Amino acid sequence: MAQWTIDPTHSEISFKVKHLVVSSVTGRFDTFQATIDSDTEDFSDAKIRFEADAASIQTKNEQRDGHLKSPDFFDAAAYPKLSFVSTSVRKLSADKLQVAGNFTLRGVTKDIVLDVTFNGTGTGFGGAQVAGFEIQGKINRFDFGLHWNALTEAGGVAVGSDVKIDIQAEFLKVQTAVKAA
Image (tube, rainbow, N blue to C red):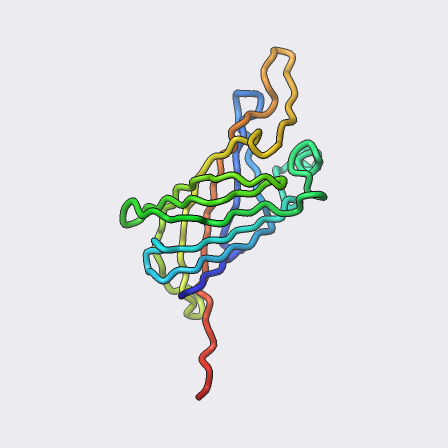
C-alpha cells in the first residue's frame, strides 16, 4: 500500500461563510496534517486522514480570529483539533471522486461528503512523486455546536449557517526504505 502525505507548503485549507447575508468571509487553517493510503493509481480505494489545529485559523482580522478561537465558535483551548477520516470513496469519472467520512469539530462527529477532483500525479523536484487534488464540501456549523450569532439592526444575521470548504492539496508519495538482504 502506498502512503502519501500532504505538502503544507503547496496546499491550502480554506472556508467561506456568509457575513451579513450579502458577502462572504474567507478563512484558512495554517497548521494541518493529512495522509492518504491507497493501492490504486486513481485513489479509488483511498483511506484518508486529515487534522487541522483550530488555533491556526486566519481570516485577516485579528479580533475575528480571536473570537473564532473562543468558546463561541471553535473553542480551540478545549477542542484543539478538527479532523476528517474517510469511510468510503466512490469513483464518479476518471478525475472525479466522492469521499464520505467522519468530520469532527468541537467534539461532535458527523458524516459529510466531499467532492474531489483528482488532478493527476507527476514528478516534482528531487524526483518525488506528487499528486494533486481539489476538494469541496459544505457543512452546517450549527450541527457542530457553533451557534453564536448576532442580529443586525435590520434584523439580518451576522454569520450564515453554511460553511463552504475548499481545499487545494498536494500530496507527496512517502518513500519506503529498502532493507538490505
